[in-house]
Amino acid sequence: MPGPLLDNHVILVTGSTTGIGRAIARRCVAEGARVMIHGRRERAAQDVSRELDDAASYVVADLEDADSPQRIIDAVIDRFGRIDGLVNNAALTTRSNLDTIDAATFDRIITVDLKAPLFLIQAAMPHFRAQGGGVVLNIGSINALGGEPNLLPYSIAKGGLMTMTRNLADAHAHEQVRVNQLNVGWTLTEGEQQTKQDDGLPPDWETQLPERFAPSGRIFRPEEIAAHAVLWLSDEAGPVSGAVYEIEQYPMVGRNPEKEL
Image (cartoon, rainbow, N blue to C red; front, side):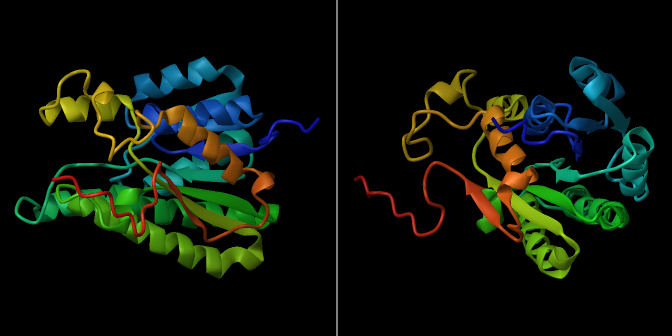
Protein backbone atom coordinates (compact mmCIF):
# COMPACT_ATOMS: atom_id res chain seq x y z
CA MET A 1 0.00 0.00 0.00
CA PRO A 2 1.37 3.45 -0.88
CA GLY A 3 1.96 5.81 2.02
CA PRO A 4 0.57 9.32 2.53
CA LEU A 5 1.03 11.58 -0.50
CA LEU A 6 3.05 14.20 1.38
CA ASP A 7 4.89 12.11 3.93
CA ASN A 8 7.71 14.19 5.53
CA HIS A 9 7.05 17.19 3.28
CA VAL A 10 7.07 20.73 4.66
CA ILE A 11 4.39 22.90 3.06
CA LEU A 12 3.69 26.61 3.43
CA VAL A 13 0.09 27.63 2.69
CA THR A 14 -0.55 31.37 2.58
CA GLY A 15 -3.97 32.59 3.62
CA SER A 16 -4.63 29.36 5.47
CA THR A 17 -6.74 30.54 8.41
CA THR A 18 -10.02 30.24 6.48
CA GLY A 19 -11.62 28.81 3.36
CA ILE A 20 -9.64 27.00 0.69
CA GLY A 21 -6.29 27.68 2.35
CA ARG A 22 -7.38 26.15 5.63
CA ALA A 23 -8.80 23.12 3.82
CA ILE A 24 -5.50 22.66 1.96
CA ALA A 25 -3.53 22.90 5.21
CA ARG A 26 -5.75 20.29 6.86
CA ARG A 27 -5.49 17.92 3.91
CA CYS A 28 -1.70 18.34 3.72
CA VAL A 29 -1.40 17.29 7.35
CA ALA A 30 -3.74 14.35 6.73
CA GLU A 31 -1.37 13.30 3.94
CA GLY A 32 1.68 13.32 6.22
CA ALA A 33 3.01 16.86 5.80
CA ARG A 34 4.09 19.45 8.31
CA VAL A 35 2.48 22.78 7.53
CA MET A 36 3.17 26.43 8.14
CA ILE A 37 -0.09 28.31 8.58
CA HIS A 38 -0.13 31.93 7.46
CA GLY A 39 -2.63 34.70 8.07
CA ARG A 40 -3.02 38.33 9.09
CA ARG A 41 -4.81 37.64 12.40
CA GLU A 42 -2.84 35.89 15.12
CA ARG A 43 -5.83 34.41 16.91
CA ALA A 44 -7.12 32.76 13.74
CA ALA A 45 -3.66 31.44 12.85
CA GLN A 46 -3.22 30.09 16.37
CA ASP A 47 -6.56 28.31 16.21
CA VAL A 48 -5.75 26.45 12.98
CA SER A 49 -2.23 25.63 14.15
CA ARG A 50 -3.56 24.31 17.47
CA GLU A 51 -6.11 22.15 15.64
CA LEU A 52 -3.30 20.54 13.60
CA ASP A 53 -1.17 20.03 16.72
CA ASP A 54 2.51 19.15 16.31
CA ALA A 55 2.24 18.99 12.53
CA ALA A 56 1.76 22.75 12.21
CA SER A 57 3.15 26.10 13.19
CA TYR A 58 2.08 29.57 12.16
CA VAL A 59 3.37 32.94 11.02
CA VAL A 60 1.47 36.23 11.01
CA ALA A 61 2.25 38.68 8.23
CA ASP A 62 0.44 41.16 6.02
CA LEU A 63 1.36 40.49 2.38
CA GLU A 64 1.02 44.19 1.62
CA ASP A 65 4.28 44.69 3.54
CA ALA A 66 7.31 44.45 1.25
CA ASP A 67 9.36 42.44 3.74
CA SER A 68 6.65 39.84 4.41
CA PRO A 69 7.64 37.25 1.75
CA GLN A 70 11.17 36.91 3.11
CA ARG A 71 9.97 36.93 6.72
CA ILE A 72 7.45 34.17 6.00
CA ILE A 73 9.96 31.92 4.27
CA ASP A 74 12.50 32.56 7.04
CA ALA A 75 9.87 31.50 9.58
CA VAL A 76 9.32 28.21 7.74
CA ILE A 77 13.04 27.45 7.67
CA ASP A 78 13.53 28.46 11.30
CA ARG A 79 10.70 26.17 12.41
CA PHE A 80 11.09 23.16 10.12
CA GLY A 81 14.57 23.44 8.61
CA ARG A 82 13.36 23.10 5.02
CA ILE A 83 10.52 23.88 2.62
CA ASP A 84 9.27 21.39 0.04
CA GLY A 85 6.14 23.11 -1.19
CA LEU A 86 4.72 26.62 -1.39
CA VAL A 87 1.00 27.19 -1.90
CA ASN A 88 0.25 30.77 -2.92
CA ASN A 89 -3.37 30.90 -1.84
CA ALA A 90 -3.85 34.27 -0.11
CA ALA A 91 -5.77 36.81 -2.19
CA LEU A 92 -7.97 39.86 -2.02
CA THR A 93 -11.26 39.78 -3.93
CA THR A 94 -12.31 43.39 -3.52
CA ARG A 95 -15.18 44.24 -5.85
CA SER A 96 -14.56 46.94 -8.47
CA ASN A 97 -14.97 47.61 -12.18
CA LEU A 98 -13.76 50.18 -14.69
CA ASP A 99 -16.03 52.87 -13.26
CA THR A 100 -15.25 52.26 -9.58
CA ILE A 101 -11.60 51.17 -9.49
CA ASP A 102 -9.07 53.58 -7.95
CA ALA A 103 -5.29 53.46 -7.91
CA ALA A 104 -4.98 52.54 -4.23
CA THR A 105 -7.35 49.57 -4.51
CA PHE A 106 -5.68 48.36 -7.69
CA ASP A 107 -2.21 48.56 -6.14
CA ARG A 108 -3.37 46.71 -3.02
CA ILE A 109 -4.90 43.82 -4.97
CA ILE A 110 -1.91 43.49 -7.30
CA THR A 111 0.45 43.55 -4.31
CA VAL A 112 -1.30 40.77 -2.42
CA ASP A 113 -2.54 38.63 -5.31
CA LEU A 114 0.42 38.86 -7.70
CA LYS A 115 3.48 40.63 -6.31
CA ALA A 116 3.59 38.73 -3.00
CA PRO A 117 3.44 35.27 -4.68
CA LEU A 118 6.32 36.25 -6.95
CA PHE A 119 8.54 37.32 -4.07
CA LEU A 120 7.55 34.36 -1.91
CA ILE A 121 8.79 32.13 -4.74
CA GLN A 122 11.96 34.19 -5.00
CA ALA A 123 12.59 33.81 -1.26
CA ALA A 124 11.93 30.05 -1.39
CA MET A 125 14.12 29.36 -4.43
CA PRO A 126 17.50 29.22 -2.63
CA HIS A 127 16.09 26.53 -0.35
CA PHE A 128 14.57 24.59 -3.24
CA ARG A 129 17.91 24.70 -5.02
CA ALA A 130 19.82 23.56 -1.95
CA GLN A 131 17.42 20.64 -1.50
CA GLY A 132 17.47 19.61 -5.15
CA GLY A 133 13.95 20.78 -5.98
CA GLY A 134 10.57 21.94 -4.76
CA VAL A 135 6.98 22.59 -5.72
CA VAL A 136 5.00 25.80 -6.13
CA LEU A 137 1.23 25.63 -6.44
CA ASN A 138 -0.48 28.90 -7.25
CA ILE A 139 -4.17 29.06 -6.44
CA GLY A 140 -5.71 31.00 -9.28
CA SER A 141 -9.25 31.47 -10.47
CA ILE A 142 -11.33 30.89 -13.56
CA ASN A 143 -11.55 34.69 -13.53
CA ALA A 144 -7.99 34.63 -14.91
CA LEU A 145 -9.53 33.78 -18.28
CA GLY A 146 -11.55 36.99 -18.45
CA GLY A 147 -13.45 37.39 -15.24
CA GLU A 148 -16.61 38.95 -13.89
CA PRO A 149 -17.21 42.64 -14.71
CA ASN A 150 -17.12 43.58 -11.02
CA LEU A 151 -13.90 41.68 -10.36
CA LEU A 152 -11.69 43.61 -12.75
CA PRO A 153 -8.46 44.04 -10.69
CA TYR A 154 -8.79 40.54 -9.19
CA SER A 155 -9.15 39.06 -12.68
CA ILE A 156 -6.13 41.03 -13.91
CA ALA A 157 -4.05 39.76 -10.99
CA LYS A 158 -5.06 36.13 -11.54
CA GLY A 159 -4.31 36.44 -15.25
CA GLY A 160 -0.85 37.73 -14.35
CA LEU A 161 -0.40 34.86 -11.91
CA MET A 162 -1.18 32.42 -14.71
CA THR A 163 1.50 33.92 -16.96
CA MET A 164 3.96 33.96 -14.07
CA THR A 165 3.26 30.28 -13.41
CA ARG A 166 4.10 29.32 -16.98
CA ASN A 167 7.12 31.61 -17.17
CA LEU A 168 8.71 30.31 -13.96
CA ALA A 169 7.91 26.70 -14.83
CA ASP A 170 9.80 27.08 -18.08
CA ALA A 171 12.69 28.96 -16.49
CA HIS A 172 13.26 26.59 -13.56
CA ALA A 173 12.22 23.10 -14.64
CA HIS A 174 15.89 22.17 -15.06
CA GLU A 175 16.35 22.91 -11.34
CA GLN A 176 13.64 20.35 -10.49
CA VAL A 177 11.28 23.09 -9.34
CA ARG A 178 7.71 22.50 -10.50
CA VAL A 179 5.31 25.45 -10.77
CA ASN A 180 1.64 24.82 -11.51
CA GLN A 181 -1.65 26.65 -11.02
CA LEU A 182 -5.19 25.65 -10.11
CA ASN A 183 -7.78 27.95 -11.64
CA VAL A 184 -10.55 27.38 -9.15
CA GLY A 185 -14.24 27.76 -9.92
CA TRP A 186 -17.08 28.87 -7.65
CA THR A 187 -16.42 27.51 -4.16
CA LEU A 188 -18.54 27.76 -1.02
CA THR A 189 -16.18 29.29 1.53
CA GLU A 190 -17.29 31.28 4.56
CA GLY A 191 -16.15 34.42 2.79
CA GLU A 192 -18.12 33.67 -0.35
CA GLN A 193 -21.21 32.82 1.68
CA GLN A 194 -21.11 36.25 3.33
CA THR A 195 -20.06 38.15 0.20
CA LYS A 196 -23.05 36.93 -1.78
CA GLN A 197 -25.38 37.92 1.04
CA ASP A 198 -23.74 41.35 1.06
CA ASP A 199 -24.42 41.46 -2.70
CA GLY A 200 -28.12 41.05 -1.92
CA LEU A 201 -28.67 37.30 -2.24
CA PRO A 202 -30.72 35.45 0.43
CA PRO A 203 -28.96 33.55 3.27
CA ASP A 204 -29.62 30.21 1.56
CA TRP A 205 -28.54 31.37 -1.91
CA GLU A 206 -26.30 28.35 -2.39
CA THR A 207 -29.38 26.10 -2.48
CA GLN A 208 -31.02 28.11 -5.28
CA LEU A 209 -28.33 28.19 -7.95
CA PRO A 210 -29.31 28.30 -11.63
CA GLU A 211 -28.25 25.19 -13.54
CA ARG A 212 -25.99 27.20 -15.86
CA PHE A 213 -23.76 28.03 -12.87
CA ALA A 214 -23.99 24.66 -11.11
CA PRO A 215 -24.99 21.77 -13.38
CA SER A 216 -24.38 19.36 -10.51
CA GLY A 217 -26.82 21.25 -8.29
CA ARG A 218 -24.14 22.75 -6.05
CA ILE A 219 -20.80 24.53 -6.15
CA PHE A 220 -17.47 23.21 -4.90
CA ARG A 221 -16.52 22.67 -1.28
CA PRO A 222 -13.09 23.82 -0.06
CA GLU A 223 -12.21 20.22 0.78
CA GLU A 224 -12.61 19.26 -2.87
CA ILE A 225 -10.15 21.94 -3.94
CA ALA A 226 -7.76 20.67 -1.26
CA ALA A 227 -7.93 17.15 -2.71
CA HIS A 228 -6.68 18.49 -6.03
CA ALA A 229 -4.00 20.58 -4.32
CA VAL A 230 -2.32 17.72 -2.48
CA LEU A 231 -2.02 15.72 -5.70
CA TRP A 232 -0.24 18.58 -7.46
CA LEU A 233 2.03 19.08 -4.45
CA SER A 234 2.96 15.41 -4.33
CA ASP A 235 5.36 13.26 -6.32
CA GLU A 236 2.30 11.52 -7.79
CA ALA A 237 1.99 14.48 -10.18
CA GLY A 238 5.29 13.47 -11.74
CA PRO A 239 7.44 16.12 -13.45
CA VAL A 240 4.45 18.12 -14.74
CA SER A 241 5.21 21.84 -14.63
CA GLY A 242 3.64 24.89 -16.20
CA ALA A 243 0.16 23.40 -16.08
CA VAL A 244 -2.90 25.56 -15.46
CA TYR A 245 -5.65 23.20 -14.33
CA GLU A 246 -9.24 24.39 -14.30
CA ILE A 247 -11.41 23.14 -11.44
CA GLU A 248 -14.89 23.77 -12.73
CA GLN A 249 -17.95 21.65 -13.51
CA TYR A 250 -18.21 22.74 -17.14
CA PRO A 251 -15.67 23.64 -19.85
CA MET A 252 -14.39 27.19 -19.61
CA VAL A 253 -13.38 27.48 -23.27
CA GLY A 254 -15.99 27.32 -25.99
CA ARG A 255 -18.97 26.86 -23.69
CA ASN A 256 -22.18 27.93 -25.38
CA PRO A 257 -25.24 27.23 -23.19
CA GLU A 258 -28.52 26.65 -24.88
CA LYS A 259 -30.40 29.87 -25.51
CA GLU A 260 -33.67 30.01 -23.64
CA LEU A 261 -36.25 32.55 -24.75
